[in-house]
Length: 79
Image (cartoon, rainbow, N blue to C red):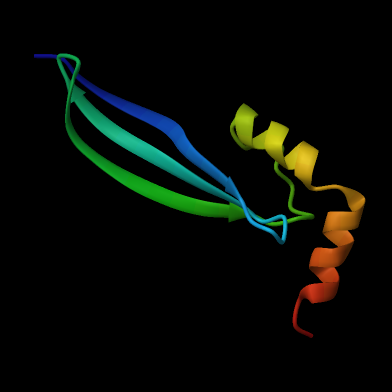
């Protein structure tokens, strides 16, 4: 019996505001068969440091978090 813990970013969504929602799945595998899983979500808002994110998340943030999007997001925040 071989147990393995596998983590994968399985969903990336970009909201109209430029916020990137990321869902990570953690699965426990036994001999190649998933026996358990759970999900964790976090967000990356325009202007956040995303350098330690998954490579796909970084690519999406680089494309969507333009200077204009970051500025518009900051203006929209409540004071």
